[in-house]
Amino acid sequence: MSLVNVIILAIVQGLAELLPVSSSAHVVVAEKLLGLDPSSPPMTLLLVMLHTGTMFAVIVYFWRQWLDIYLGSGPAFKAFAVRVIIATVLTAVVGEIIIKIIEMTLLRNVPHSEIEDLFSHLEFIAPALAAAGVIILAAGLYERRKSSRGQAATHDMTLRQAGLIGMVQGLCLPFRGLSRSGATISTGMFLGVTKARAEAFSFALAVVITPPVVGREVLRLMRSAHENGAADLGSVALLTMCGAVIAYFAGLLALKWLSRWLESGRWYLFGIYCLVASAAVMVLYRNGY
Image (cartoon, rainbow, N blue to C red; front, side):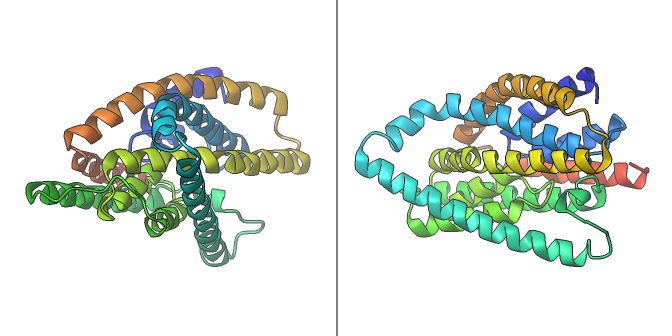
């Protein structure tokens, strides 16, 4: 893993992470094209560190909005915290169940298998991208139909809505290509929440789940280094930190674009993009990547 590779991947991640097009899928494809192994511990750690960079971009970009909506008063913060906690707990439960099922089925014959072992398989990423595309496209069309009928979305979010969004987020965690932001924002739209509120809540959940995911990948890298003696932890840490900084600035640009597209009613176009990207990934897979 060279600095040039890290810069390329950080730009890809930063631009795609905060758009509902699955940054993970884009980074995996880029890694494949660069001749890297997306399932190796250094690369999975790099991916979550790039997520960390974009997490800070999310905090900077949404801070004022969160302050106005969720942190303006004690009751508002309490209601927000309860919804985030419920959603995050359900994310963990659903995500862990799916991971265990996958490890006991698809990976049952692989010694010391982990869910990350599937991250380099484009044949799984392509259908996940297609599924994300269908969800986003359907939500965009649903929103346009409601708007044409004069039906207004609600600015409030119930505990049930927050819980369902958290469950959908858990469904996305094990699968590269199933866009977390795309699926959770679309779920909010289906449940009658405004796009802006669903967007803010989705990225608040991302801020909460990123640190545990980073911790998991750090432990995975340290375990691999202990067992194989192959990783230079110091150089890997430095490179991943550089990548996080670059992803931060690229993420800020992507957030500005995402918000404009949400407000313009063109959400469904992200779904079309995911479907096209799914076809492209399948072509790459059939050509040996």
